[in-house]
Each structure stands twice: as C-alpha cells, then as structure tokens.
Picture 1: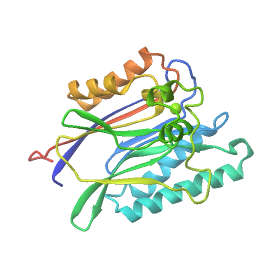
Picture 2: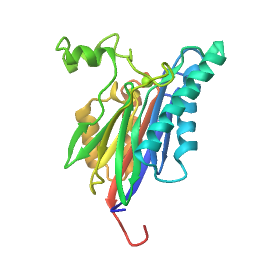
Picture 3: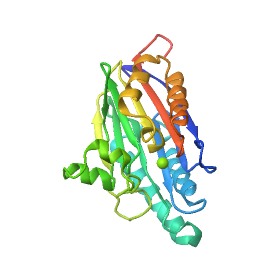
Picture 4: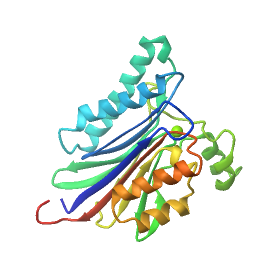
Length: 246
Ligand code: MG
C-alpha cells in the first residue's frame, strides 16, 4: 500500500441516555459506525448485528467492492430476519457509514459508504468536507431549498431518517470511491457528535490534534460538554506516509 493507516476511536452513551445504541468497528479493512434505532434494546441489536456481520464477512482481508456490497446486503438481510423473528425487535434498524479499504487487482482504494444520517467527513489540506449525504427528512427539505442547513441543525424532526439498514429487502447504499491520499484524515461519526459540535469546531480539532486517538477523545469530550444528549461514536482515520516497519 502507498500509505499506512493510523486511527483512534471513541464510543460513549453520552450524558442523558443509559443505553448505547451506537456501535463501531475500527480495524483494517473496516472503519464503520452504526447508530441503531428501535424501542427497548432493539437499536443496539440492529447496530451490533450489522457491524458483526460485516466483520465476519470482511475481516479476513481487504475486500473488493463487490464483496463489500454483498456483505452489506447480507447484514441487511440478517437484521430484517431477526426483526421478523422477534416481536420485541420489530421495526429496528440502523444507520451505517464509514471507510473501507478495498483491493481491485493490484490497486487499493477506499470506499466511503452511507445509509442513514451518520456521517463520514474528510479533512484535506486543512479543509473539512462532508463526503456522505444524510438520508434524512431535513436533508430532503434542504435539498428542496425549504430549509437552510442552519435551520436543519435545530429542526425538531432532524432525527427522522429516510433510509436505514434492516428495514427493506432492497436497500440502496450510497458509495464513493476515493484514492488513498497521504495526509488525508477521515472522520466517521454518529449524529451524537454532529448535533452537539458544529462543523467549524470539528474541523479545528481535526486540524490541531495530531494524534488520531487524541482527536477522537477531544471530539467526544466536547460533544459531552455541549450536552451529550445522544450516544456518540467517533473514528478518526489517518492516511500517513509509510515507514520501513509498516
Ligand atoms: Mg444517534
């Protein structure tokens, strides 16, 4: 590979909720966040089952794009089946986003994927860009010009997602293929971070906190300081120059 990976992560229930329905996996080739939804324990089942299924299918090594898409479809089926088999879990679902290292022949690339309203960002030359687009009610209104992004941030229905894993048999996944670019830093996170900490503040921490684990810890601390009203999942992934021992 042209670059080495360095990463850090943080997972926390926040300051208000006792349960944690967010789940994450940060281990090559998978850097994924899932934010479960559904009554009682159902949300945690959906997010953890989705992450576990992807890990089971892909942890053996760098996947290719087809294997990744098949694994996501299998995770969707697994959540749907559990949901249909257990009335207490009916209607559960989960967001899923993140960065996956894939191999196509000799070439390695990153795939950013998204279903729902968790987010993947990239910091490139000090500029923070949101790679994913939320599948949410407010995002649709922003796209139609009926809300500004600022209004969407505080809208009472900002938590309504329009797409999730485990809800329908034919789930569409948004996918972006990206080259491996040394110096880029990815942030994968649930809405428990972005609803508390605005993008300029996130960008500032990602620019100034050199170590990825320190950056994840700082972002988590700030989300809790600003309210911690939801579960918080954060992965910071750095693409760095390869050293002799990598
Ligand atoms: Mg959430």
